[in-house]
Amino acid sequence: MASDNFPAKTQMTLFFQTAPFRSLLVVLVLLAGASEAMATLGKAPSRMEAASSSTPGAKKLAATPGQQAALYTLRVTQLENGTTIQEYVTPAGLVFAVAWRGPVLPDLNALLGDYFSTFKLEAEQARTSGHHRSSMTLARGGLVLSSHGRMRNFFGHAYAPDLIPPGVNIKDVLQ
Image (cartoon, rainbow, N blue to C red):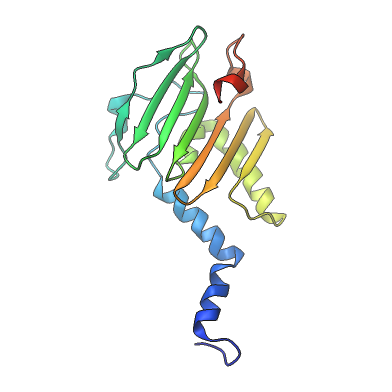
């Protein structure tokens, strides 16, 4: 179906550079990591036994015991897909911050929990205003999020300022 003006190879190259293709790629990356994130912002920390599900690959390979700081606990989990999730837990048992790094973007819906709607609204507004990029930074609706990367190298963090324990400097925590 190549037009007379452009050979098929050129048309395919142009297609892969379009915004609809990039949007499709982002959706596929999000789906690839679905059901693997166990920490949920604003909820109790993840548990090893909660990691198994009927979805293949949706289990934790390793979780470190909580590393106790004076004001919070850090739990580190490596997912089967190679992505590492860090969850920062208040003494009251709520996740106040999460961070991720790895080859696959984690399921942000599961990771952000009730805060996902804020992220989704911001992402939709950015897309409708013509910004089609993989990096996003936002501070809105009780959520601060920074997400960056490309295929095989995603990293970011999110936190709920209202849940940060008194005396904790979030910039030091998320270094």
